[in-house]
Amino acid sequence: MSGGAVAPLPRRTTHEVFGSFIDETIGIVARQTRDTVSFAVGSPSREALDLVGADDLAATVIRREGASALGYGITEGEPELRDAIAHQARSRGIRADAGDVLVSAGALQAIDLACRVFLRPGDLVVAESPGFANALSAFRNHGARVLEAPVDEDGLDVAEAARLIRRANARPRMFFVVPNFSNPSGETLSLARREALVTLASTYDAVVVEDDPYGLLRYRDEQLPPLGSLARDQVVSIGTFSKTFLPGLRVGWVIADPEVISRMTKVKQTMDSSTGTLAQRIVLEFHRRGGADAHVGRLRELYSAKQERARAALAREFVGSGVRWNDPAGGFYFWVRLPARMDARRLLDVALEEGVAFVPGDAFAIERDHSAALRFSVSAPTPERIDEGVKRLRRAFDRLA
Image (cartoon, rainbow, N blue to C red; front, side, top):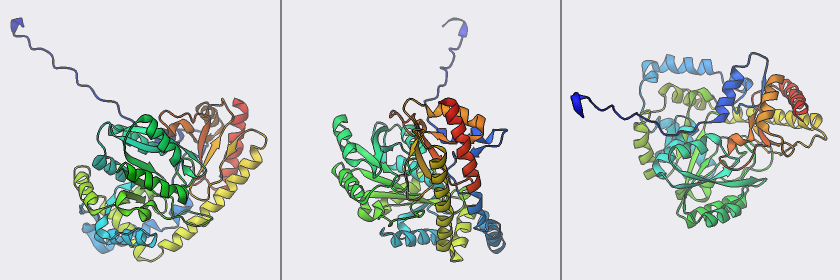
């Protein structure tokens, strides 16, 4: 090179990353200037949040503990909270003590920790389709390939998953499932399929990650055993206080073999060092007061009534329309199927004009086609707003049809 010229540095590039259309939809709704009934958000209702007395809990913790409640915590989480989480797990049949628990910044961080500990680029993850969109993106952001297995009224179709694995001539490293009232389908994995899933995973020496934010929110029928109670050493169990307490605190947990917890702890040290101390101690204060079980009972009554209200409104407004929906026994969601060739994203555009929102079905898949379906969440609106929102949805449907 003549004249002492310096070659330009190569242009710095970024690699592809994946996000969540759920969160994008929530942002779209937040920016609406018209009154909008949102069936898009899968978060506790304002009534539920008001039940816990958050202002008194926070004030009590800060008044009693002062600056220590606002300092750094240990990476694994507050020891007393870990013990409380382990105690609850044992009540559901999972062998656990405090040493088997890591407190995470919500369930999503727990999923990310599982990805960092178990997955390498190119590894195969078997997941539900439709499935939890944020988890699907997390797997892809860690370089994993995702094999989407269909869901029916008994949850993940394990036999079909096995067939798809054989056809792909692949060896899965992880199976991921939301076993109870799944996000987005609302379906629950049957006991027979839970047992079959554990057996299938064991044939490949794969880990099963169960993300169970809705398990306590069952409104009818008997509770089913967690996957972690069926194969303790093979399963990573993830939970959160976001659906039954205060989502803004971002407190969740992982229950796993102590060696897995040790590895996750090291990874978490490079992410955020520890989950917020004040948030953990607010959760602890609530549990110390002894009202957690009664609170969950009140939530079941609240959300069960909303689910019934939505079921009646859908039946009333969409009779003879060709629209179909399932019948979940708990949780927040209905999976609504539109007539063939109707696109839920196009329906959303019209629905926003009518003042109602939801999340289109194709947000919950990578390659499988769920474009003629939508996730319908009943947790946030009041019963009266549910009625009004379904009327608006029918108007949007008629306009598009």
